[in-house]
Amino acid sequence: MRLEDALPQEGSKKRRRRVGRGISAGQGASCGFGMRGQKSRSGRGTRPGFEGGQMPLYRRIPKLKHFTVINPKQYTIINVGALAGLAPNTEVNLATLMEAGIITSDDGPLKVLGDGELSVALTVRAAAFTKSAQSKIEAAGGSCEIVN
Image (cartoon, rainbow, N blue to C red; front, side, top):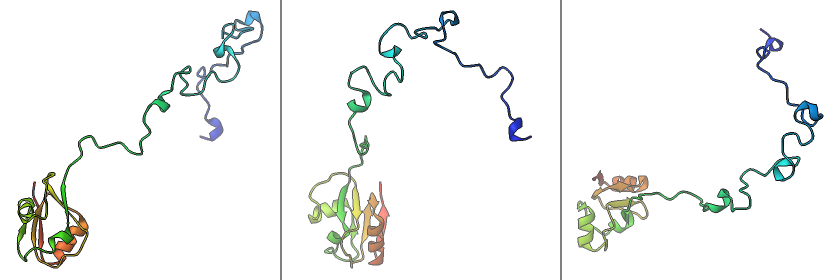
């Protein structure tokens, strides 16, 4: 089979409607577009999205850089550098940090971020760790445990 052999099936292609070719043709003069008005003129009727002068949908909706998260996770965050003043081999969790006064408010589960340096070995129990925080805690000889 060659490219020139690929033809549409017999009867599948209809000839185009020839409008404006006299009264006996059935679509003469106004070509089935009525007498006057915007929709009878030549060219495109209206541009896509045009709503007849009403403020169109693409201008009514807010222009956001991103969609907000419906149920965002709220964490109590702390940096690794804030844990450097603790005694070695202590167990660190949200309750012990509140007692020590390092964290003043409970905004949700504890999340440890990786800003700062740590030289003390600690056992840290938190809901989430960043990769840099986990690597710094483990490099200091401590351990990270994820709790719910």
